[in-house]
Length: 160
Image (cartoon, rainbow, N blue to C red; front, top):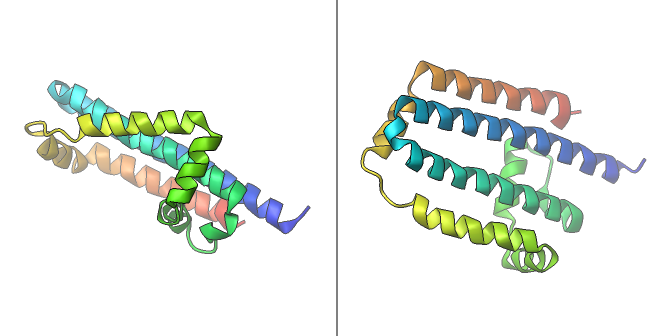
């Protein structure tokens, strides 16, 4: 098997596991925030749906870059550096090409723009609420579990 194919498969596996862990953490944090302040539930769900849509968009972009320009992702650093590189090396040319290749990507981007406009509207007390939730013992447990999972992925998949 070619080293490049093995490497691409390893990168996809590591990213897939990272993205799943990130989604799990975001959903658990969202659910905790809603549980603590149900009156802010609609705003919380909207704002977190935007974060989840950003993850979906990054998923599609990552696979596009691995298929069309893998050298731009530089997988030699940490997993978090690799994930960040997807957004950092994304270009207008990539955006145009992917939009032409995948109508579902165009639809996702339109949905992101629509949700973003609504999610950015100020909701009285929302920031303070998220700050308070982020300091709770349960939130810290969720964050620590996410960080442990990222460390496991780096150890078992990323560095393999």
